[in-house]
Image 1 (spheres, rainbow, N blue to C red):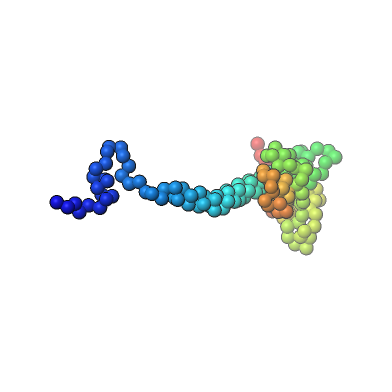
Image 2 (cartoon, rainbow, N blue to C red; image 1 turned 120 degrees about the vertical axis):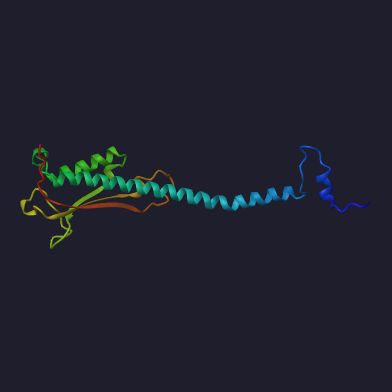
Length: 179
C-alpha cells in the first residue's frame, strides 16, 4: 500500500522523542535578516530613548524653577518687614531665597537669571520694587531662566541653545500669619 503522506509528514510520524519536528534549511539566512533588521531599528530606538531622557531632564529643571519661584513669591506676598535683614532690600532677599532653593535642588544658581517686573498696567515690564509703598496690591511677575546646557545630564547637549524659563504672577501685599 502506497503512503499518501508527504516526506515532511513522514519525518514527523517517525521522529524520536526530543527531536525537532521541522528543521528549515534556510535557518542561517534568517539569522542574517534579524541582524539587518536590528541594525536598521536600533539607531531609531536609541534616538527615541535619548530624546525621552533629555525631555525628562528639561521638565524636571523647569519644575524646579517653578517651585523656586513659588517659594520666593510666597515671601514677597507676606509681611516681610521682620524677615528681611537690615541693609538688604526685599527684592534682593526674594532673589537670594530663589537662588538658594535652586542650589539646594541641584540647579546651578549662578547661571539663573531672575527678574521681578510689573505684570500689568502702564508699568508692565518695568522693574518692580517690593519696598515701594505705592506698589502695594499691584500685580508683579517673577521670572527665571537658565540655559538648558547648564542642567543637561548628557555631554552631547542635544538641546543646546535652548533656554528653560518659568514665571509666576503675584500680588504685592502684607499678609500676616496669625498665631
